[in-house]
Amino acid sequence: MPNSTMQVSRPYIRPESIRSLDPTQKIDSSVSTTHIVEGLAEHTVTIHLKAKKSPGPVHIDWYVPLVDIAGKWHPTIGSDRSLTSGWTQTIQNYATYSAPVYSLFSAQSENRHTFALSDAINPTGIRVQVEEDDATINCRIVLFDSPWPEIDSYRITIRIDERALPFHKAVASTADWWAKMDAYTPAPVPAAAYDPVYSSWYSFHQELSDQAIEENCKWSKGYNCKTLILDDGWQTDDSNKGYDYCGDWEVATSKFPDFKSHVAQVKAMDMRYMVWFSVPFVGKKSKAWHRFSDRVLPKAFKPAPCLDPRFAEARQMLINCYRDALIDWNIDGFKLDFVDRFTAEAEVQSTQETADMVAVPAAADRLFTDIITELRAIKPDVLIEFRQDYIGPAMRKYGNMLRAHDCPNDALSNLVRTIDLRLLAGNTAVHSDMVMWHPEESVERAAQQLWAILFSVPQISVRKGVTPAPHEGMLKNFMSLWVERKELLLHGELTPLQPQKLYPAVHAENAEEHLVAVYQDDYVVQLPELSTPKLTLINATQKPKLYLEQATQKNTYQGTVHNCLGETMGHISLKDPAGIRKIQIPASGYALLSH
Image (tube, rainbow, N blue to C red; front, side, top):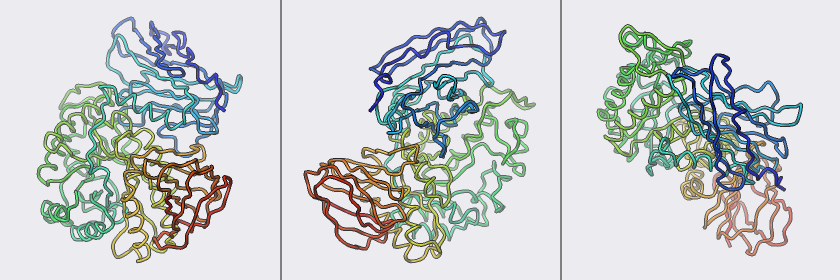
């Protein structure tokens, strides 16, 4: 049961919670608290400096009783959701990296304390740690710990949600809060953003040719892919997976002798065409390096130097690049990569130009605002993909596709990352990392790569002529099933269970169908009383059985059991009485039921 004390809006943020770390920096601070509903409050903090200056670090601290809290979540958390002690690191957030939100939840996946910051552009730090002395959790916000322009005051709102909601709903309500702010109005999402994608990356890497891409586009059309993303390699004859030649963005004619004609060939197949760019990189072997070598960020060149967006000419060079590509090649969109490398940095001096901005994240925000304004003026429904971890409310202003971070042949990571993305994405299309597997893999285990991405838009990156016939049959069956349930899977009521256990089961429901996918062997699924006409059970495990704890059903559900190829393997009926029962479904198989 929820702890009732956790539903009261406590006065966590007080003026004494705010302190400057610089003894020479004198500040005045005030806090205004608005109670939205029981358990939900917004604390607006105003900090006044004694004079207009670049501020030094400021901490805001509060303490949460460690009562019925079992785990934590934030957008870049990875797989360890356990509570941690005093060695906890500060998590960085800024326009092009992560999002300033943090959630503490119970063992039953219920929200206990979710907080978020209104400033998702400028760098902020979040540190949350267990205080073993008194069994509390210290929540800390770190402000001004990077270069800032001169200011005399600053205002930020800290939203604290302790309502007894499912954890994922508390996180989703944070995304809704941001989306209603003028500063973070999400980009429109065209229907095309929800269509399956064929990606060249894992299937080809940099070994590209126009003929091979065209052949695989035609092949992937048979699996319901409607968009191509041409990844890294189109711009260079160097195939060592490095970035030495990034920055010029000239087509490698040895691979694509007539790129515009090649794009037209693919689009004639009724497929859209998107092209990859690593936005900040200027390789040392590029012509652009000689022009901009004194306008790059002062960091180690791994994997390549990064343009400094605080310089107007650097920003304009990128804007011109994407505008010209959109017009000259008649493409449909861009995969804009590595934008999280626009990190907060010290001042850079150039002999050619004076920077017109101080903070890198704010300059990156201006860069992308100008890019998207220019591109949408040409093609209003232009597709823009960003990759985890640049997935916050600022990035939703520009991008309409958010993809899971690279996890080749790793089904569990693809599951966790796509579900994590769904929590904050609102209506922005969430895409899987590109799906691949070894051709000698069993068809059942290869199918698990696909079941893992069920609740996102599939990106496929296997290759014609390499994929065995049984795998092709499995892929075709999965993609047909996904397309048939696209509305349910992407826009239905999503209920991911037990984030601390990496989502062993995920439910989706709309008026027509209830679907549950099980990802953990021997997990007991609690099946609620259902009213939908259809029920789908997905066994995304390696065992040929599922366990259901069934509530009493008014209706009898019955139907067919299928293997991952779609072949019918038997029949099934779910009747009273309620209780736990074992159901025989093949590994990576599924059951389709109705009443």
